[in-house]
Amino acid sequence: MKRIRLLLAVALLLAFAVQVLPTHAQSQSCASKSSYYVASLNADIDPGTADFMATTVSNAESLCAGHIVFVLVTNGGDGASMESMISSITSYQQWGGNFTTVVAPQGSYAFSAGSYIAESSNAIYMEPGTTIGSATPIVSGIPTGEENSTLTKDINAFTSYMQTLTSANGRNSTATGLMVTKGMSFPVLCPPGSASPCFSAVKEHVVNGLINSTTVQGALDYLGVPANTPINTPGIRSSLISVLSNPNVSSLLFLLGVFAVLADIYHPTIILSVVGVAVIAAALFGLGVFGASPLAVILMIIGVAFIFLEVKTAHGISATVGVVIFIVGFLLIFQFPPASSSTPSPSNPIPQQPANFAGIPDITYGLLVALSAAVVIGSLYLRSIREALKKRPKVNDPAVLIGREGRMESDLAPGGRGVAMVSSEEWTVTSTQPLQRGDQIIVKGVSGQTLAVEKAVK
Image: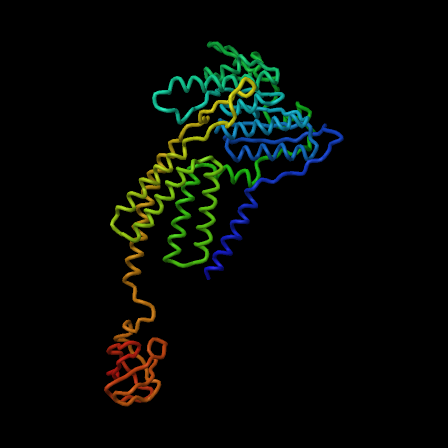
């Protein structure tokens, strides 16, 4: 049975790995690079969207598509994923491709990390009612006492990074620098009759132009994309990576997987064992993709170990300590990894301080409360299971048969031994009374594996 569980767990994990590991299209020499490849993203920037960008570039190159049109709508996201996406775009440009970002349809936006991605493109086009900008990073992990100086250095570094991307593609780097230093956003055009000063993306040459359309298809028609060109969106693998890289989801899955395995100890089933292992593996994968520090993961594991210990000790202290340690590890997950491991330079002005473009959401704190309650309730539930198991009669313990009735299967002389059927099993019995086959008996005592019986009184 254990071997079957292990094999099923391994098979499930292999199937999971096939889905999440990246696939690479084979490169080929291209006689022409005149075709188009269209991709559309409406999501926060995270490891899943970075995987989608890498897949987009790989597919475009394998199809010899010399033009990628990337329809972008985003509020921003984490710096490491942003850099990965920009790296994919740069790789495509070095291959000889032309990368165009379109902010569409009407009412869309490319904020924060999205503005860096857009500015790394060869060309940017926007539709009426769209906005780009607000690119000031949120910097975490600054040592106490160095808040002002470190934050200033990182803002300056990201400003330089933005301006380098912009100037390399012939746009106004002075204006895009204000996206970082002042958090400015640029509407594609200023609203008619605007009372306050307004700087439009077109006028300031933050983008390459305006597309007079309100739909994605209208934008594609304007750019000369053939009408039958498919619009590619994130696939199953990219979407799964996005979900698992959410620290709230990964932490919750981690805890659920642990409780599934723990519950299987007391309710043996193949399904719970396999699902529990698979869920834990998925959670650890998500935490790794997100860049959670090993210390955070270790603390979460230690916390879970103390929760397990509560089942043994049953005094409440272990569960409480486990919850506290688990929460500390959970909060450490939000100490974001550095934006880059490269050394800053004029040609590579990427800051070293951990940075992100989204703060810790309020839902995280609510989830912490819910997790704490779930852990306490779960540990109490497991404790009740343990107590019930302690009280449960031992398997094959003849003492549980005292008071039960049965039927003689052989004749029995006083003081001798015979055979009787009790609770659907044959037992060796003895009695001080003479008994005949077929007599109804009742169990009065146990001596080892032999039952002491008497003739049942009707």
